Length: 238
Length: 315
Image 1 (tube, rainbow over the protein chains, first blue to last red):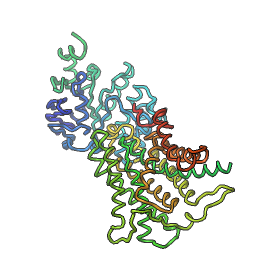
Image 2 (cartoon, rainbow over the protein chains, first blue to last red):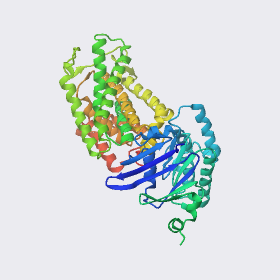
Image 3 (cartoon, chains in turn blue, purple):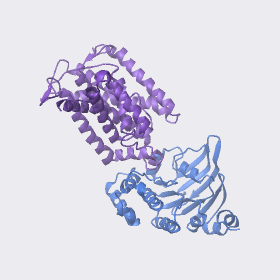
Image 4 (tube, helix red, strand yellow):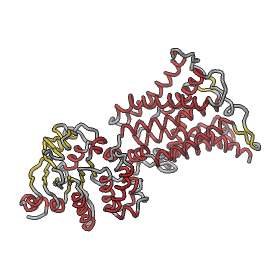
């Protein structure tokens, strides 16, 4: 069986600066896979390359067995790969509902889109209560819910979440993380990028540790949580 | 009072024309942050498209039913020109420094003017007049001819057409932007192009739509101008383009409602200044000066424009 996402020898450079140095990893169907590492480790660059916003200088990316590293970003979404970007990047002057409908831009099954809109409001009732409000007026946590809801609206098979917990209160972070588990239960495969290693690894079936553009460690979430190097570097213990 | 009402009508007519052209500047700016200085030429080529349609198929006739077909001819010429310039000249410069497409725009502007000036009467299989001097624009029933008198106010028929065209276009534009999938895509690209791509929006296609949309309105403006002035020429796009650009900045560049409001305000300022500025600075000869004084004042004191530029407040 082929992996849902397979990254082989991926190298990405900004001019002469190589941000991601020949990394390989894979995400199996139904898993939550976490990519952890400090600022500047290359996590966001990796996600942006997978979703087609950046082009690799070397290596290959396969999604459900199909090579996608030369596919335009707007075509990758309709293949079933959604990317909720770092910093949430909701459309601030559009309403909640318009944001969610943009998530479904690549689809034309109107009836199913309506149903998915209701499902998103069920999952995040606060969005339903404020569907006409401009998204820019929302708090960080609410914007994160909206960003996740928007990503769900494309009916992805694989959802990539870039730092969903960034800048959130502990309660809100819990809420977002439990949504990740809920999405997995509903059958969505998740690639989760986090600086908050504890939260990310707790829920991960598998994890990779990225350091200055290289994967230095990998293992199941529970293995990494008890790994000495991980504990020292990312969990603030010594 | 009558003088005021007369200038109000004149101002709204002039302003409607500016507004129709200004939307093209602002839509393109909102999507690609480019001031397309060749947009005035899209307007000019729209007018020539309408004239060509008339000369080819309806020469000598005056039925008003010809007008919609002339407008379609204008739109085909204008949209074709705009889409082609985007594809050939601007797209290769998409990631170049901002100055490069700006200089290119000025180059295209000169190129298109000269193209029409030198080659209009040499188009094969068509017997077009030379564009080196002003060419009479066809006068049709209903939209040309004796002006309408309302009390002591004189309203040209072409003025009614121009103001009506702006109203219809503004309503359709509002609907397109806010109620259609493609319109929502445009809003998304103007706010955050990268994230728009993550939504599955083809940004290149949205850019083409923005150029085409501006060209459609410029084409209608081109026909309006032809009907109002009774003639057109190869350099008509230059001053109209600059004025419309001023209108777009006045309203807040990137803001579509702003372009409409800015156009109308600019038109009103020009006609009121013509009437009410006393002494040697009054009268028609100074109206262009007042228009650009407004541009400078806006840039100095309120660079975001009357309604605020909606592109710079990216969160």
